[in-house]
Length: 295
Image (cartoon, rainbow, N blue to C red; front, side, top):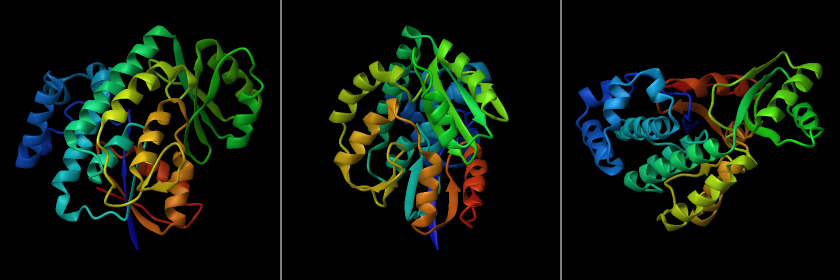
């Protein structure tokens, strides 16, 4: 039996997140207090007392989820013995810190820089995302390939029969109609500020590349399955390259989980706020006769 630890991305936040950890574990309080110092503003107050709207700001959401996930991993340190790790989008940074490939301080600085760069890219190019339910991956890709004058691409291969697409406002509008005509059960616009994991994030990718290149990354304590390739690696240079490419490439979550199962994972433990990933993993794992567990 092999344990796989997985870390959530944007969308897992909720008002009051992390307060129970802060109140009951000295290591959590210490790490959260340090987060305020590292970022230069009181993010912990926003996590504990902020509204849903406050927490939806990319510059707040991303560091908040990262802090919660890494703090929880430290609280669980005595039981944190993964054979492999993975993180969904932003969660990849949490996974790397928990696997001791990157320091907490460096990880938090990168996540905040990532959030600011993404926010800036969103403001400069109006764009959005939509969830496609009940259509085969290849069919979605085929439909999107017919849209020539707008940018619209697969952004998240979340689970079997669920893909999120990213693109220009017009591109998403056209794609939604075409995908419905192609047989999608539902195509739902998402309340997001931009087209994450698409070529429209190129400016953010370029900005973040410089910061990632300067960040020390060590061999992690176990393989990390990265979003860009869905394959395991422990090579620091490969980890850096994939982190940079992640902003403009799709999150291959379905492929990642299938690869982890094929490599022996029998227990998936979600480390972070909420249990968003467990629902996705359950659908994926049902195809390959695995089971999952939640912390």
